[in-house]
Structure formats: structure tokens, C-alpha cells
Image (cartoon, rainbow over all chains, first blue to last red; front, side, top):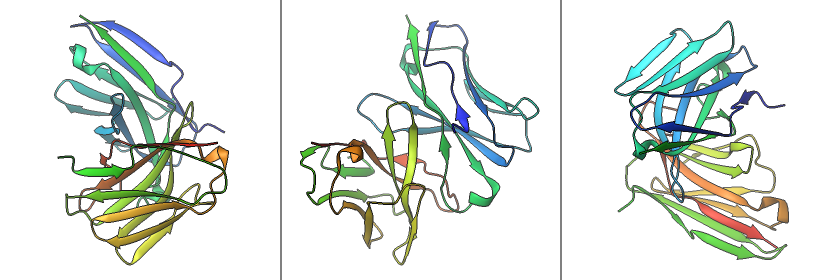
Length: 115
Length: 113
């Protein structure tokens, strides 16, 4: 049972344009969501997060949107840069796991930004 | 130098062998984690430790054990390796006050034949 799904395995975008990475979830008990970026042969890097009490969080070129009614979140990267090419994981935490570090990860989406 | 260092980076071994994966960090963080990544499944939590005397099982702890030798060191052991433990393993730490992993090592690719 995949509680966090990233249905697009890959995405290709032109440099300077917007990249939109999507993530759907099924568990209504999730209260916190995170995005990680991973380059080949490196560990994931925490990128941005959002609490379920918000619908938007912005950090520079990165914005995460949360639509709780649709159980959907998205990561927008504007403008996209070649250095953004990586695998992006979304992850979710349940309220009961707030002190455990237990996250449910999606499968990841590989973003390619073409110069 | 990396803040979170994992050794070895790659390991091939045989079924039934005992394996230890090591993790050390220079960030001074109390909270450390071990995850595994399998193709198509994202990352899953194996064990976590919030300080030297605190060890907790994660989502998939069966077949694994850990040791927190010091604040900076957190080792993962496979007592008797089996092929379905072939995966990419990550150690991570989190900033004070956070219980979400934020700083990952570069991973150990483990293959069990």
C-alpha cells in the first residue's frame, strides 16, 4: 500500500521554465510534508517542508503547495536551472510519528533541466 | 570533508555473513537515523537514535541491529545477511529540535549474493 505516490518517474524541462513535481497521498493523518533532492552517488538533501496547517511555503526559487482536500502537494521550481537536475522525493509524516523520524517516502521523480 | 560519513561506500558479500555499516558525523547532532532505499520504494526507516542511550526500531528493523557508540557514531549491523537486504543504505542526522532527517551521508551500496 503506497501511501505517498509520485506518479511521474521523470520530468524534462527547459532551463528558465517552471518545473512542477507532483505528489499524492492517501493518509489523512499526515500532518507534515517534506521534499528532498538527491544527486547521483550522494545522499538526499532536505529541500523544503510544509505543515498541514498551511497551503503554501516558499524558499527562494522553490515553493511547495499543499491541497489537503485533494491530498496533493506539488513542488514548483522557478526558474529551473541545469543544477536542479536530480531525483526529487516527497515524504510525509503522521502526527503520531512527530518524534520518531518516521517518514513515508514517495518513489521519487527524476528531473532533467535542459540548457 | 563531509559532515556525515558512511563506510564502506560499496560492499559485496555472501549470504549468511555478518556485515557492519558505519556512520560518523561531525555536526554534533544527537539525532541519527538509518534508512534503506530500494528501487521504486523510496526510503524506509530501519532504526533511529535520539541520543547515545536511546535506540528505537523503525519501520523495517527485522534482520538489523544498531549500536550508538558515541554521539558521533551510529553503526548498522546485519547479523546474517540475506539477498533481500541488497539495497542502498543511508545514515542521516537532524538538527536540534527537529525529528526529521536533514543531513544524509552519501550512502553504502550493499550487495548480498
